[in-house]
Length: 452
Ligand code: ADP
Ligand code: F6P
Image 1 (tube, rainbow, N blue to C red):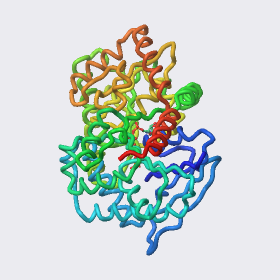
Image 2: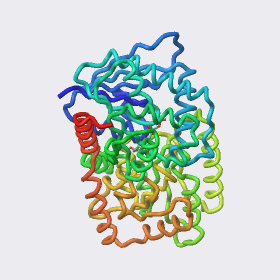
Image 3: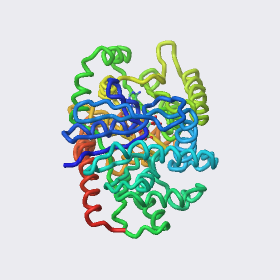
């Protein structure tokens, strides 16, 4: 078996106990727990001035060698902050109004992809199979091919992909799609994303629809459930439990990102307090929202707006012995999070759009089978088609969120168990490991048949 080469913008630091918040690093790290020899190449998370291409730092842990490079401040701004996160991110999350295009950013994005290719190519070996991840690196396969790399190259998109009618608003849409044809196989999270992407690639002349596959990412449910059980006995969960005095807890866990629908979600919770006053002084909503992409303007604005909304709701409803919303923007150790999920009676996961949403799957895995909590999930999350026994809501409808929360808080144990058993089967069927195996098997097949 040849070596697997993973390429992603974000690479977890193997020395850090806590992985960075974000589905890509968490999902891939879970998928790599086998014995496959792997090279994981990407950005080190650092910035450094440089006149020439960087030399990668190598760090081997078990079967995985991490090869990471810094970016210059100019590259970081043009490629990461601007083209990836102020142009592609809003566009792929159907937020055309937030897309802030400038041609110089597109050029910087292409240049960084070419630089990634130049630095990676000499590290490659003859039997390698290459797997590139996420929207930061759409043009990477084409850049590698131009350097003579002939290895199989697959791509997986962790975020949604919009229909052609929306994507064509991106000025270099056709150039980007044309570059994507250099991948042997492209995986996306849902059938809807696959249809959208295929429609775009067909416009660009791709002829074989089997080169775009829906392949939803999962978690490692067995180890996550063990982590939750262990953490449940730990000091952090004990302190949280004691602070609740046997009253119900709603939990939300999201990077602080406008795609997560946090503002809309707080309005839904506010509606719950208005329309179902019996929950006053009983229910607590804990929102964990680690700051993400803090240098991007839209994210700074969101943070300010949320501070205001939470302050307003707490100011209007709090009693001297009750705070309706507890809000944390610090990252929390993953194990502690697992314990918090297990303690929570309800998880509130209402993105306006999301590639998958691993938090929903983690919440299910963390539950006590005898007395599981209820999951309120946006029907616009990539996880919704698989987790349709959750209480599905439209995240734009604050009344629907309030009704679903009330239903979840008052749901009988038998009904919670019935729903949870079905959800739990789902997350055990499609795991991080099976996702990676299925995708790589399909990549090998595509390569053998060699269609256009
Ligand atoms: P995204 O990839 O858009 O961030 P996901 O829900 O798919 O969304 O993945 C988020 C991942 O980051 C989950 O595995 C979650 O547990 C983790 N995470 C989110 N918030 C925190 C936090 N405060 N501390 C540690 N991990 C977090
Ligand atoms: O899963 C979507 C994703 O965009 C990943 O590509 C990314 O690593 C993660 O969210 C967190 O974002 P960032 O890497 O910009 O901190």
